[in-house]
Structure formats: C-alpha cells, structure tokens
Length: 437
Image 1: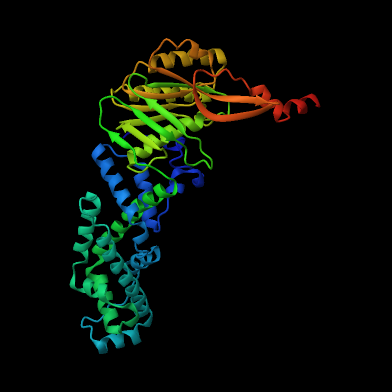
Image 2: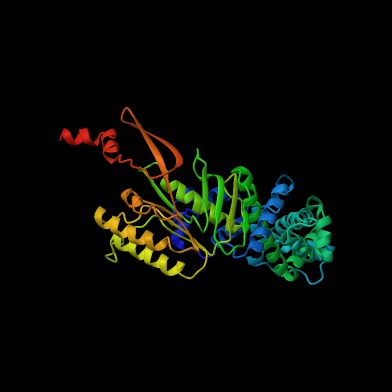
C-alpha cells in the first residue's frame, strides 16, 4: 500500500508529540528491539490479502497466549548479551579445565565477573527462547509463528546450548562459566544476534495483540476485489477518551462522502477515524470498530493538516493546491485509493474557495477506483452536487441552548446549515472584550 509521510502524520500514526501518536498507544513492547520493529510494522502496510490475513492470525494467536508468554528474555538480558560482544576481554584459556578456570579468575577478575554475569543472563536467554518456541507452535496456525518456532529450535540445537538450557545459574562453577562464555563469544555470536532479532519481532507482534485487547479492537475482513469498498459498524477513534461510534458505507456506486458541520462538531475526528481504521487494517492489526469489511487498497492519501512554508515563500493556499495536484496525479493510475480531505481550500476567500472546491469535487467524483471523504465549511457547494448519485451527503448536528453549543457528534444524512462562528466568539467573551476597549 502506498502512503506518504504527510498521511502518516495526518492520521497520527507517528507524531512529533509522541504521546499523541498511534505508535505510542499501541507500543506495549518490553524490549528496545521490539519497539523499533513495531515502528517498522506501523510504517509498512501490507500489499496482499494473504499477508494481511497471516499477520492477523499471528497477532490473534499471540493474543491467546499473552498470559503464558515468558517475561524472559527481558530487555536487560538482551542488552547484556549485546554488550558482551562489544566488550574487550582477555582471551580465555585454550584448554578450559578446573585449574585453568581458577587461574583465569584470579588473574582476570573483572573479565571473569563480566563473563559470569553474561552467562547467567545467557541461561535466562536460551531458556526463555526455548519456552517461547514451544509456546508459539500451533497446529494449523500462523505460518510465521510455526516457521519462527522451527528456526528457534534449529538455533538452539547445539550441544552446549542444550547444556545451558538445563543448567541452573545459581550453581555454576568457574570452569562451566568459562566454557559457556567462550562458546558464546567464539561460536554463537551470529546465532545470538538472530535470536535477539526473532525475539524483537515477536515482542512487536505481541504488543499489537495486547493493544487489541486493551482497546477492544476487532479484526476486519479484508477482501480482494476490483471495486473499492469500506463497510464499518461502530467505528471510533481510539485515541479519544470518550469516542463516538460511526457507521461508514463506501463503495463504487456511492464512493464520495460530502461532509459538513460546524467547527468542533466532529468532522475531522470522523475523517481521521475512518482513515486510521483503513490503514490499521492494512497493517494486519485489529481496528477500532465493532465490525469492518474493507477491500485491499493500493493507497491512502490525506489533505488534512496543510501549512504554509515561510522559508520557501509558499502560502497556505498554494500548498493546498499542490497537495490536491499531487493527489490527482497519484490516483489517476486506475488503482484503488482512499482519499481524505478536511476543509478544502481554507486558505483563500469564500468566492474563490467555492469555485475551486466545486471544480475539484466535480472532477474527483468521476474516479470510480477511489473512495473519498471530504469535509467543507462551504455548505452552498452541496446544493449544486445533489444530482450526483455517487455522492453521499452527511453532516454533524449542533444544537444551541441558551447560547451554549451542544454537540451530539452523531453523523446524520443531509447538509448542515449551522453557522456558529459569531456565537462562539460571543460565548468566549471576545465580543464583550472588544466592546469594552
């Protein structure tokens, strides 16, 4: 799936303020490597239904064993193992016997202490990986998990490693410590690095399984069709403390949602919720919805948080135009796209904005291969578009009681006519402040 950095930022998959990002909230990893691989997974949506379904199965099956999953190897153990290979150590005796081991300990106490400390963690490491390999093997299960379990066993299938798996770290003699340390350092470095990488990947997938449980995600049905579609019930934005559920129906015959409503009524949240759920579905993770069916999409593009560029002398409106231009160039390829546009042409006067918006919408709606959700504050545009059968008109209602705004955040059919800017100005005391100047 094609997605650019602008879209990832618009959907808050990643964010400069990390606590506002999807990554931050689903990052329940226990290791540094797991965290980095989770970041990789979230930045690389999948391109086939088969890959998505296999990832879903992997995450679901890990979710079934979360409570049994061993806490070792811990992040500390992994760091100790990595540090061991970077640390300079005096060579171990070529013939490690009881006497030579004690002599080495006396003459190289610091190196011996590091070796002992590392070996103790190494026992935790290989014993933990052995338990994991047994735990993630499923009959008729995830290909990824079964292949991973098999690979772990191959890497552990060494005589010395098997001795380490059976060993008790509380009763190790110096000769055993040096034997294990020498083996790790001279013959098991590559295998250790591969096992750490495997452990990191499992940690990342396990994090997505934990997140699915924490946020009550469900796994969508992803289908391979020539016609794009999204059907979602109970769709919500999981980053909100008290989210509101939406219904979404987009298909080739009704591929355009024209969204209106007052400021703060919920338009942007709805657009981001729909886009984020579609994106998460292509990661292979659960989605924030009661039920969802989506066709495999070739790309998602958004035009939500456009800004000016003072250094380049580019205005807000110019950047809006450039973003729309790039979008048109990308989606004219006949592939299946989801396009998200929030408040089109905010950077120009109303007359220009109406004309520009109408031209853009009239053009975009003719693309049957793409699905669109577009919001605007220019309500008058909608009345000139009502004759197009593929455009769905939706709005968020706002009620006013005693000069107080009440937002239901419920999506309704039709076009809003709410104009509440002056009321908000008055409610916030700006009007009275100006009158008293």
